[in-house]
Image (tube, rainbow, N blue to C red):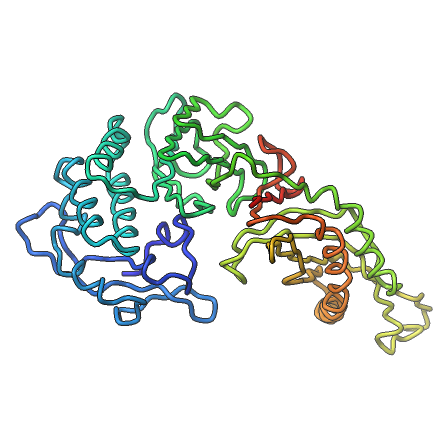
Length: 426
């Protein structure tokens, strides 16, 4: 049994950063409703990264703190599968008491995962919010609970539904594809509900396509926000959901402000090669946790170009065939050059630099040769973009952190409209 994707992705899992807080407990071939049967437990699964792939190991000794694992493995009463038939209040109190007794990152993580599973086990109970808050208050335990977001397939909060139990330590809570939308499914979301459990605030973004792409709409999470209908323009089109923890005083820096300057930098870089010319508008969007860097987020800059290949200069091309004169035969290839820019805060100052680059070339006999040449030039020209970024961003100081939001508008738009850099002040 592998680590469930919904736990790896939606909880904002960062491989290698915190093994203890990401340990997932599983049960081998136990029947949920047969409580008289003694559960057969297997050792915990510890996610880890090998060559960029998420894998698991059965060796609990690989954990950062294995001494905290054994009590949980031996505690049948703490396995949430054995408690599904009990009253929700009893379930939650058992989980909370265990966390209160252990008071570790592991028990905190297990409790949050267990609550998520309890929520996923059935349809929404209107009393659940009060049960959760009252249970925690009664037990005197403070947990990192940020919000509960419920999405619905039909308008007016009508079932089927799906839950996102948002832990407040994460900046992003991620549902990157339709399989993470549960019974609601793809292109079917019509309404949603947001409960806020703490003094933190949240944006709930709905996206037209998977991986947070295409058109988007944003709903703000107050103490209890009800969206009975997402509107005709966004009904039944959602394929991914992103919940973002925000600060009321965070400031937005639109990357679109720098679009003309970035285009000029790229244009200047390619002007030295007469075979390459711009071919279309520059697009600034984002790339969130791509497969080649699953822990990172980027501003993605895409510039379409044309590359001209003079066949006479590449091949000893005949001047005539069967006595027919052949003209010079230059061939144009459509291509795109792509830069992935990472932004961060270093010693209180906003920094940006090119982390990755890529070139996409249309298929043809010389495609691979063109791409190889472009990749070499992109690597050499990245320093020009880095210089521009350093000069432009050095005035943004006194910062604690930075994160990204899509487009140029907080309310709605398209991911190709740009990116908002959100500045968190000290």
